[in-house]
Picture 1 (cartoon, rainbow, N blue to C red):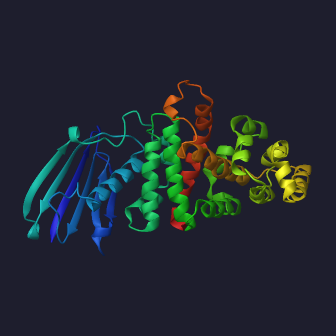
Picture 2: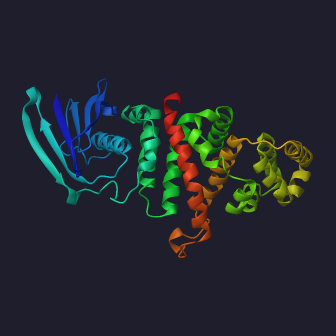
Picture 3: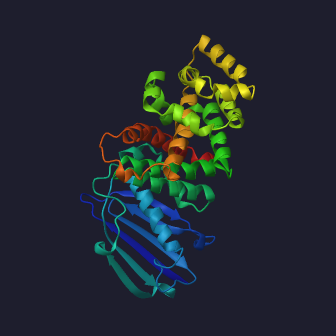
Length: 353
């Protein structure tokens, strides 16, 4: 058997504090798990394999590279602070712990994971007991790992556009694992139903929107453009009808009421208008608050529209948004905290996936 000892040293001052001691799994570790030990200054991983290639980190699909990613991701989740990687040391041992070689990778040859200015305070809201799930080697554990790396980088992003993109990637990884579905539509329906049925599982997302009013939402989003984009033909308005009939929150229904004329002709053509109009009037006659509806509408329905406009290149590259107070920048700056809250809520219930 061969042993690869991986030591990651971080530039952190002060007394040493142990953060985690346990095991980590990868696809190549087989039925056993590798040992991992994390302090605020160092990450140590001991990997036992039947054989180890000559360049274990640079080979395509390297499991040793992935195990380092797991260690770093957990480190940042536990410390909630950025840290510079001082160096990376690889020590190889043969049978009977016979020392074979040592390789040190200096900081000059390392692409740092975070900038010193990164604000990782948001990840402190992640339950540490749920964070360590990323050390496992299951589909859910991989989704948590991928999501946390994107979440960490979202909090180290240089602008709101990159921050939104990374938050959405984290969100995408989690909702696909949770739903077990293959299409975005099916994933979104599953998650929307879960948010409505189990609002207590989403405390951060609920808190992020609870103080919003109908007027506040309307002034912050491109609601009419979303309706025109999502329902471009009369045939597509069946989904609009279903979306409205599922909604109970008076804030969202007020916005639908005030903008329904945009698709009134289509709704009437498909004989959906009467049911929609009746539902809105009935619900608004006795206004009610349903925060789950707002989370679903803003974080899933509306942000998916925003994400598609960016991902499908239906807008100029954000680098050409040269005004610091550009409307799209303001919109994403407003949306990002809500999406981040939902991502963290999902990580905190990932053991239920």
